[in-house]
Length: 385
Image 1 (cartoon, one colour):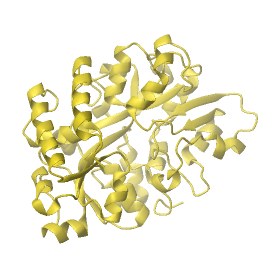
Image 2 (spheres, helix red, strand yellow; image 1 turned 90 degrees about the horizontal axis):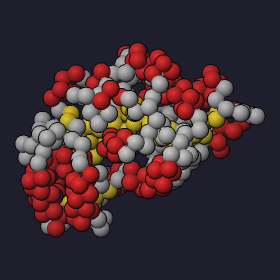
Image 3 (cartoon, one colour; image 1 turned 180 degrees about the horizontal axis):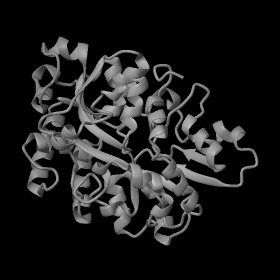
Image 4 (cartoon, one colour; image 1 turned 90 degrees about the vertical axis):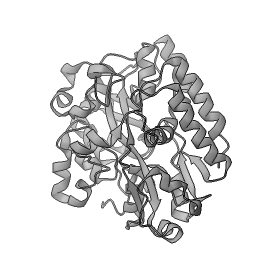
């Protein structure tokens, strides 16, 4: 199925927590080997019949049935649902799940995760993109990647509706964060509810290195953000739902996840939504596979992870509608053979120069910082429609 006909968004719209059982049960009659995987919505290639090609291929290849559930809608709420089991080292119900860098760092610090067995992960050894490997890179929360492996990379950038932005400002596209604060855009700006992305981009626009920012840097960015909320310039602070506001015209520009815009354009069959990697810097994070200590099927989980480090598999997933940065070397070249336009998209396949000059990772917070910064962010952002 062509990605223009079905994307992650159209496949999962309104689905909530969706188990692969409902759509793949017929593929694994009498299966005795099962792996349970919890993930975020919009993260799996799909067909019009509701099935997932790469998961079907994994089942056929290994004989392991996959119970795939989109149970993760927020790092904190998912963690709250399993924290007691994690603390006790008992089964959480998932053999593997995918969470964002900072939460994975917390789980590692709390000794909640099983160490990965690289003898069972040959594809990872061969194909993990060096940018994601560990110390000094986008995996600095897990040096050497002993406990986690990236599922997808996430770029936060400035997004805009091309026609509406031009109509209001007279400009073709925003070039700086300051462009979002133009008076003509009052009440038309939306930003992400993920603190690290929104305040990270604001801090970088203030000239701050987010790999080593101070409390004063954070407070200054939060004060600017608060002023824009209080004045009504920022109309919304949202998760994935912001994309609907761009489509219906309520939002014209703001801070977005690039993969969402690529998917929306692909689904609509147009290029109405644009995105900009700011020269001052855009944030980059990863959602990561981890295996909790209490997992009942660690070996099967490692087979699943290893499977998703096959470049051919990941290329199929990317072409099939998962428009986030793959951490697997060689995928771009395979995609280019059938979809050169997709392969040329810097938001999906960043160049080495883009990694080096425009993408930055929000530093790991101490437990005390995490509590105080998150509370301060919540106090300002909650209730903004």
